[in-house]
Length: 479
Image (tube, rainbow, N blue to C red):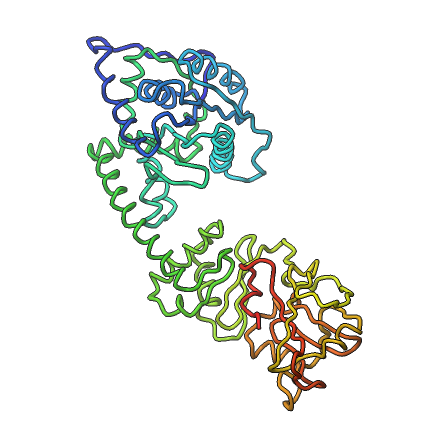
């Protein structure tokens, strides 16, 4: 990606016709970009290095300059990089394509992996560029040698089938397509194209820094491997394709099992019984699918094993496990997740509210993210409409010692016991509003009306609550 003092310029080797590679790359790119409609805008990740220079040049021939935006991300990690944006802008102008640049203001934290930080920051900036440009796809210049290095790096880190499948040639992301059309093209073919076209590019000194794993593989490990096994690249890439297919199948199976476990619309809760009954391998894939849906990095294997034991196999009524910035809680068969640092209003009571009923069918409950529905019901417990309208009502959290009689003539019971019987998790109970008339408890959300004093009467008023959000986990306990 970046540069020494002079930009590199390829010269065609003796005896090589400049036109030789020209027919191939535009055709490869055109086939690889078949998911992108003709004329749709495309953002090219343009570092100014050889690979992205070849991609931009060939893509301009394949798609036309008017549909392409070359975008440079300036990390600012070394002095030489200050010259790269100007170089990239000049090359984009020469090809007639639009150009944009993002200068990163952040820096990696002390001890943070530099390669991982740079990659994440770069992609975040590129996807912002895709959105700002109204583009349908982000295209990168990763090629076959990059794929080989990626697979070996993930092997060194103990990756599974999905990781060892390497980079996918096409991925549908929330912001559009992520396309890597050169994954089957070896680096020497890109070099030949650059020579034939007389392209200039910049050289990144970090590519020669062998303290970085990828550079060490590229300069020390792979040459020795390839000398011992001349077909290594093709064999590893073939294995990666097979592993990617297997990984995709496992991912789909895990997602199906997760849906069968009743994954909530916000992905924040599941029923553990379905996963607990699965064989260990499928159970693991389903948990991985849930972590992906939540955007949570997979924990190390020992922590994952602890998660499985506590959340899926634990015999106690409740358990909690923290994974990074997230806390998983289990109550009986419900597993729910929340951000550790976030204030979760569902676990805290809303503000006390004073109100008068004047016959409205719906009363909004600000701060509780819910509303009360009042209906005239001849069956069950109810309140006389005139008496209900005559007294001030208060909505607040019920005190710890409160009791409720859900059936006329039955004994009253503590709210704790009733919530347990109903299966309401402890962390949701404080978010269940209660309605009082003076000191008398009339109603508790998730449980129902109190039948202690008034028999059912024709036209009696009944209360029923409803969260504003249908995906609110409290909605499962509406009565």
